[in-house]
Image 1: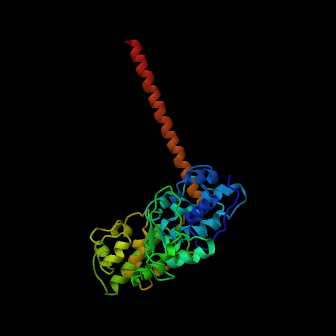
Image 2: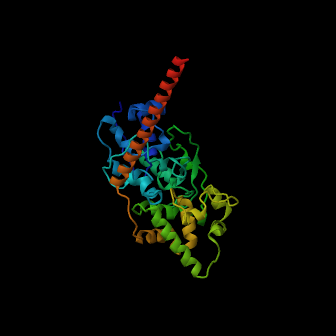
Image 3: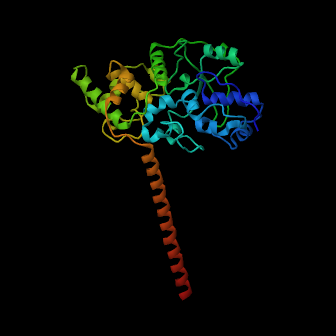
Length: 342
């Protein structure tokens, strides 16, 4: 049983807080600490607010689900791109939700915690406050490779799934490399979106806004081409090093074809591609595109409707399983009668 909890600090990732807690508590392995804190083995790279506040460490609540979600996770940034069905559990505080795992959309790339990154200057500031650096939210937004405050490249730290890694003691001594203008532009845009407080945007609103922006751009006479050529046109506006740092290969087609963005029903959006695309289409970039999306009035999902749909789907699944079991029982009975007849 845990007997204490360390203080929280501004903009620290939930994973970082638990990692510091693990070190201060003096446990030998993350698995032992996980069972003491959570009562079960936890996939720390999928750590979310519900799991954290569920533990309560038997010494009192550290913060509400809503406070932890808004200040220690990437959900405020993610909710704009996940669509209402994927993130409806984060729309309102107090909504009942499963506590054993985050929404499935947050367990996949680019939301999944795959690489740990730190800024040497930020690490030194937090080391003076906490005795050790902290993994910060703005540094782990999808596609970010630079610190928007100190204008230097982020240093990557090896990361193994299921472990709790802390910022190295000598992080402040890491080589400092000046970030490029492209990297700083992207990092600043991502940080503004994280702190913007924007609401959930439906996929239909995204598609309407994209279609409007695309039509305006073509009519302006700046560019005339087919939609399926849009990806090549966009990536040609960015340097190879900048795209490579985000994991984008200019020579390969985008992971999400642009024709699906405009015409097909969307199930997910990659924020990296959306930010790059919006900068190319609109003077105000992604922030202008978000404002346009919010202007479109489309039918909104309601939590009660989504919960009802989930329960109906579960009931239909159980009915199908019962039917299969019943048919299998009939077949077994027929086989037994046939065997007795022989």
